[in-house]
Each structure stands twice: as C-alpha cells, then as structure tokens.
Image (tube, rainbow, N blue to C red; front, side, top):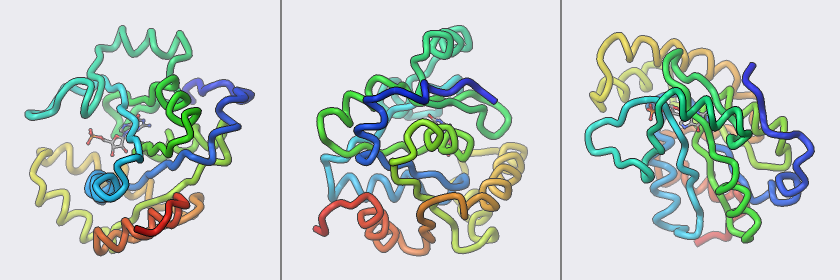
Length: 200
Ligand code: 5GP
C-alpha cells in the first residue's frame, strides 16, 4: 500500500465535509458529469492531479493534469505533498496534491476529486467526513461500448482498463452513494444532492 496523508491532520478533518470524491470505472463519464456539474455550479473546484502519464493530444499541463516524471512524483510522495496516490490501470502513477485541496476547503468552497478506487479508499482513511460517490455504468456492456466509442485507447489499453473496471465495480457498495450514469443531467442532479449543494 502506498503511504497516505497524516491521519490526524486537523485541517483535513475540519473541512472534509466540503469534499466530494467521485470514483468509478474508466469511461463511465466522470469527466462529463463533473463538467456538467461545474457548468451549473462554477464554485465547485476540481482538483488537478499529478500524473506520470504522458499528456494526450490537447491536454494542457496544469489544467488537465500536472504532468511530472517519476523523480518528481517520488519527491512529492517523500515530501508528503499528496493526499493520496495510486498506480492506475497497472501503469502510471496519479496523485492528488494535498495543499490546494486543503486551501480550497479552508476557504469554505466545495471541492471535487475524480480519482480511482485505491485513491478513494486512502482519502476515506484520512477524511471520513467527505462524501464518497461511485459513478456506475448502466452495464459492463455499455461501459465497453463507451470505451471503444471514445477511441482514445488502443486495444491493449482498453483490455487493461476493463480489467480494472471489473475490480472497481465490485467495490461500489463501499461508497456512500452509487449513481448510475444512464443520463448525464440526471446523474449530475444526483451528484448535486450527494454534495449537499442547493438545487439550481
Ligand atoms: P486518465 O489516464 O484516463 O486521464 O485517467 C485514468 C484514471 O486515473 C481516471 O479514471 C481516474 O480514476 C484516475 N485518476 C486521475 N487522477 C487521479 C488521482 O489524483 N489519484 C488517483 N488515485 N487516481 C486518479
């Protein structure tokens, strides 16, 4: 298991209820739902993760991710700069920089993390008051169809991601709420409710 943030971080515990962790398998539509949410609720801040994965065409450093090399990621772990981190899909490391999340929560505004299952478990260990939401596909077949449809992964990568997806789906019951993403706007409405945001 990777190291996690300090369990006794008082700032983390105090502001954790403003934090929502959105997990769910690859291609389930976490990005689509969180974009829809932030269009309606611009005050919701989405954490920008660090990753050792190389950028895809169109991805901007500091916007989609902080793209770092292995040495920089090692340093972030060693310095305790990450709230959580995990190897995702058996390949690259992804992690949530801790300071921006705590700053954001301390300012009283809601924050959202889009992370994998291992990361969500780590956040729950240190910030159990956060809201843990699992976004699920209507079915595994639909998930496969979406993954092929978006066309950003080759076949080997799709296979790898579907294997992770099956493991993640089995853990849905660990979450406070499971939202089935059969309709983006409806799923967003459920996420709004889970986050305790006012209806708009
Ligand atoms: P992608 O490579 O498609 O951008 O992201 C793959 C997966 O990495 C996402 O579906 C998400 O679950 C996970 N991920 C992204 N950022 C983080 C992070 O900061 N921590 C963890 N644990 N997982 C992340």
